[in-house]
Length: 95
Image (tube, rainbow, N blue to C red):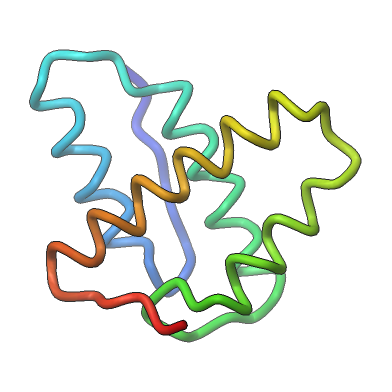
């Protein structure tokens, strides 16, 4: 298992989400790599919002346009799972 370093405003929440997923005994490295892309997007866009808003969601989705459809779907699926986790743990999405 690789240790991932996140730098965005959601770094702590992303790390906690990955740790929770790993408690189930699954190797979550490929999904963690996808969350690294989300983290980099948040940093590159200078986003300081401590939640995933509709604007952030749409911006990230739009940034994936050049990728294969399956890759886009996988990355958005992992982001959706993160949003569900954030919603359950007190960081509500803002639509």
